[in-house]
Image (tube, rainbow, N blue to C red; front, side, top):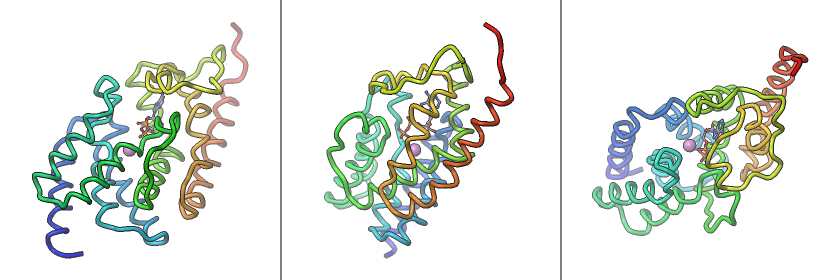
Length: 220
Ligand code: ADP
Ligand code: NI
């Protein structure tokens, strides 16, 4: 990768670090760094343009709509302004914006409008970070942030959440496993990520088994 590209990546990293300084723990800069690392790992096996993958991975959660009253346009706008200021060429900017617009799980409720190898890879890395031990930790952090119950045996998970229900996020966190986390393994785009998802998925099943065992039967 040439020097200018390296410099843009460094600047992007600094910008994201600063912007996410006070982010909720499940979406903090460490989440971004994990997604960058996993994206690179997947790309080594699957190919793809490393420059676009790195920029997309760094910028993918720059303004999550969850924390902006559901507004899905703020993230792409912030990223666009930043990349234009840093004189990235128009076609790369366009690609990165499309990645940010299309990466989120909430888009699985609608037909995805755009795809590319680079998007597929970052999306897989983002989804891998939502499952396994780290995924469990993130889910409970998010549940705590929303003041949700960890579990309520009286409320069964909803088979088919609407996009709006998903975005509201009012569910016992154990239900979130059925509403999203356990579905992710089969939604991986690349073969490499599918393989990586296997033991993380199994770990969540083991976790749930132990959870129910400890919970046992609690009357009414
Ligand atoms: P994406 O990053 O694909 O848009 P989200 O932003 O919806 O996905 O989710 C980010 C993190 O927050 C993930 O780890 C996800 O599992 C968790 N999360 C989202 N909704 C809930 C919820 N209702 N309860 C617990 N965790 C949640
Ligand atoms: Ni993310």
